[in-house]
Image (tube, rainbow over all chains, first blue to last red; front, top):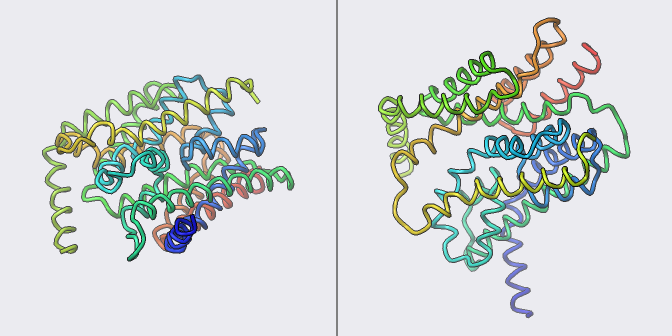
Length: 246
Length: 111
């Protein structure tokens, strides 16, 4: 028992400093979520359970507008899938790292947010700390910051009762920030421009209600057709990266 | 609140399950070893930026050009988010700066 406790403390001491940037980020973005949720009439218990069971920044921001508009379950499922689309690829680069983690692997997959993904792909467990314990502790800490942030936001919103009109812009801002990061890292800007243009066309053709599915169809089709051209640009970028790394 | 408690719980459950499934998909499909098909790797690389652009347009769908109040706040706040992010590269600063500006604009200036 005592030995396990020491090991845990050591792991915690190694993992905590790595997660401090996420602590700051999740407290803030989580608080904005709590405020948004409070502003549509869902209090702290809802904030707690959404952050406990969904655990996705942009997904939960979207969730607020889905609850507010009373979206149907198929709509909820489709939009959640869209907003989490980028998560489909995260696992690809973590298959090796999570191998052999046993039942904890399920939690690792559940808790694979943008930020935890970023930490896990770059951070290394220090000497003498089991790397699987380290990954698990990082994931657990990040999740608890997120829950704490949303609960705080909800409580602050309820206590102050200030006018939160416009706080939902946080979701747009979050996507813009992700897009700027992707723009800088991308080998080709064609995918992002195509995504924007296709959605705009779809909005004008079929309207607000059903715009996303046709937009996604056009995007996948166009990207697949443009693959020979795009493979060239992204391969070049990858080769450059590998040269730098080696 | 437009939904009943039961409906809200069902919505949250759907969000939770779909989010988990998107995260689990690579592990379900490719954890047996072996390399995913090239087309999957290709789409995995090029789809995320396109989908984010799609979601940005989706967020902006409520914009109306009938009055300045319908589009100026969103334009200024979006520009602020992008410029702040290019300048400082700090997620929090960009998101909060833009959101606070947007709230001030829609509540105060154009309210």
